[in-house]
Image 1 (cartoon, one colour):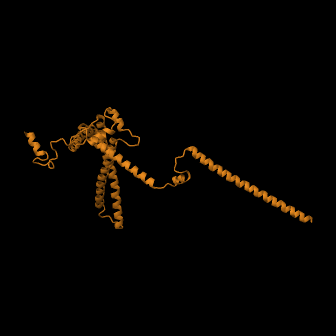
Image 2 (tube, rainbow, N blue to C red):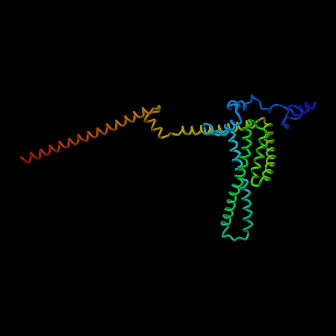
Image 3 (cartoon, helix red, strand yellow):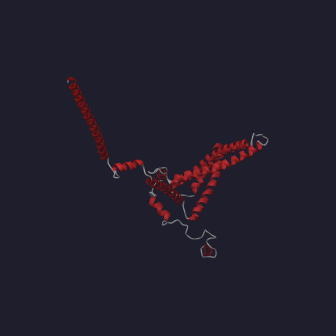
Length: 312
């Protein structure tokens, strides 16, 4: 009776619209074998009979196109986003502190001009922004990379995603973050990380459960978007290359044609050109010798004529 009453209030067409209560008692958000995403994953996946170590080896293996796996790609992106947010936060906080300190310390300072004061203020703000961005950026990048990396490695080794990966990643990352404070600091950091990791994991799994997706599907489509983007870039570069005329290829086509020539044909063409050059050189040499003989005969005739004139 209670179940039917709740069903009437929650399902579409009941007293309360499903637009107001998104979590209804239906199976629309259940992941089924006949969905498009699952079918695509099964078509491209090598199978589910690998051991944990084999899955980890596949995770850290680069394919024939030089691309990393979807799991490593998600870890890289998490580290980059962590560095970006940390750099922005640390830079803005440190630059504001530097701005306030400069105003407090230089209230009675006499500058030569307002341009000099603004220049020194800008130098201080820029320098402290860079220091804060570097200090917070690498720390948050290391934290997010270790958290997402541990969670992903455990998930790949187990072959599924659950709350245990988030708990383990949060506990280990929190303990590592407080490594400099000794065992007590590591224990407290591990407990805090365990709680925060469980909270983040619960929220993530709850959102994915509500939307009818899994972490494997998220990584799969993220990898597909990455590969499709690279393919689009390669296609655009190919079109641009085909549209542009290469002088070397144009000269080659004008000389040898567009047909594919083997090395023997190229060598024969080179030999033909070489023989033509040698023949032309030989003809020029013979022509020069003939001209020299004609000139010598003319000179001998002139000398004979001169000798005959002297005798007369």
